[in-house]
Image 1 (cartoon, helix red, strand yellow):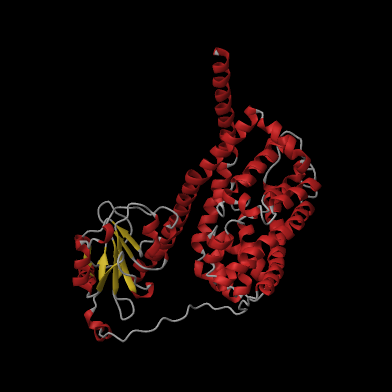
Image 2 (tube, helix red, strand yellow):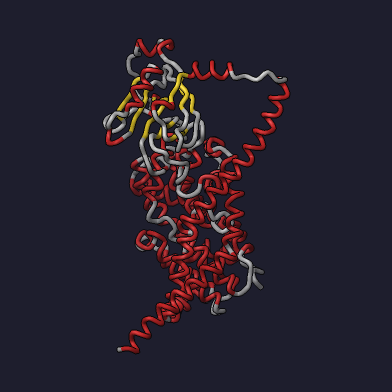
Length: 515
């Protein structure tokens, strides 16, 4: 009995020690480089507005190469997963399944070079990359070839999905529109409000952050179109700050819990959220937001919480009439040469904006590494160590080696994983891809699989990518009911039909890799 307890305790000690060594090696070798890449990438994301990629998608929706290669690729880099799938709304209904098919793959095949794209499933790449690193090779040639092969393979996947979509449309007797509709049907217009036609009733206010808050100052004024104040606070309880805003601006307030107001009618939103997600919902729509709580700019929508759209820890004392504020400013004016002041201000402003840009990009990168990358690396390290210490690696290797030691095996593995009836079951959380990738990575590190096959392996273990996400992904693209019905069958079928072709393309791109 004592020997059994000692054996169990020794196993756990070896397991944790082995996993810790894996994690430390990743933190010293990969994290610094990934951190630098993330900073630059996040800076570019902040520089390039979302409107640019959206306009590009609308213009390129009728060009095959741009539609299935350039736009989904740029969308994945700029917007990440799953936001890149929302660009599908700029495509015709008949092209939305095809766009989803290639865009969802781009969120995987580009993760080696741009780890921010799909950080929640980055462990698929890391599992195989770890085996390559164990042999002393650099993972950067693998990452670049992963991206390059993905450009070709994902484009072909989009084109073939066009054919499967047309097939299922005929089979289901469904006709999908081939025109791009960028505008929703207009809602019936209500009778004009006489009070709304008089701009004299509205006044501008300035809102600053409280002592513990951030953001601002925010200057807002209702107008004929946007004259509603929406408050989403405390289960619908009306805060005192709403009364003050009504008195100063002449606006109309609406309880967001009990009534729905179109976004185009809202000029200001009031929340009392201690989290991060709700705070960024309205700023993402371009609606200035007041938070009664001192919540900072963080979370998945932090980049939308700019100083001109978000201010926190706001009380009644933080709201003043803009006219009073301007008057106070004029009294405080300093008599210096105006041109010199403006030049100095412009130079300092540009310098400050540049520093702020990279500082915010660094913050975003730290958030990604701490909250996403490190936990995933810890999980993969623990899993790898368990597989190694328990001897499970040898057992699983015995089952997978015939399928993962050569190109033919990878082709068969890709067919099995992408089979339409199995793919939606194997896809959730990418668990199968994670385990398989980790085992294959360990085999590469042990010399059981040639390092040059790491690229075909990445495509083989992930042929079922996003097969469980098809309805949701098409929903993000504002697809209609018939489009979703056809798209599910179309995408699953194209995944299966292109699995072998994708692996072969990856194999061609692996020539002279690690030789």
